[in-house]
Image (tube, rainbow, N blue to C red; front, side, top):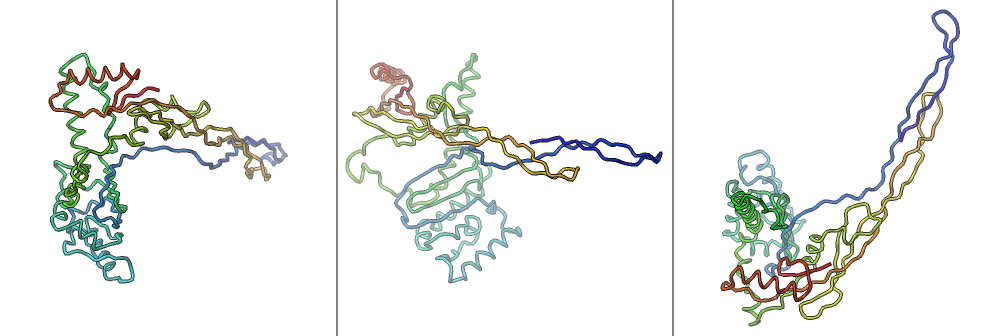
Length: 351
């Protein structure tokens, strides 16, 4: 906020007479208050029962191809000192110190289970992945293992649009549309594959039997709430947000009832409304007095909007024998019979 003050002083001029001098000053004051900020972070979450008690978190370091650098030698020295400290956690450096430095997981809680996962073969595969800057992206991912939940956060995946809306290929020129389709899907495949690559480096993660092999039958095919949230965001937050909301919304879903393949999903849109406030901040002016400077600011208060979606899951088994025309006819019939509007990821929906 700003406030302009005025005052006069009596000063003697060069002619020896006293003159009245007018002064002015603009006082500026600020105030700091909470403001809601939003960001998106794309993660790959993978569940596996291998090493169920192991936890660690590694951050990208870029040291995989810098064995002779000062930063690499300093990191190796730090890890050696930590391994000699027997009062700390269960950490002991493996024989492959280059892997330990590049894939720093010194915060792990079980050295035995870590060695069970990261065998010499897994270490060599991970090092090749971290050093690959040609086909892959190099060391650009964080790896978080929390018991049986593995979370990969690749940097290259943050700039990829995973929506894959077919509307992006629309063009009056077929050659341009075809080129855009091939380029986009090639980049999409490369980004997804190298997001999965850290998991593929671990042989034990590839030795898990599927549920059909274990139990002798297929598990129920039901979409998770994450899929419902993705579908709600595709419809757009404007359909669910509170009328007084002035910020972006975070959409959360709740399955209310289910009849066969059909469900009703309640969508809660969490956002903020704003209330104008005014505060007076004391500032010292050039006239030797304290002045109250008004500062207008906005307080953000949480609000929640609500809406619903009706969905129907298409659990029909896909077959290689089905042609594209048959598949499109099946989707059209499903939308017509269920009176729904959009079909995405084997789910038909309507708001």
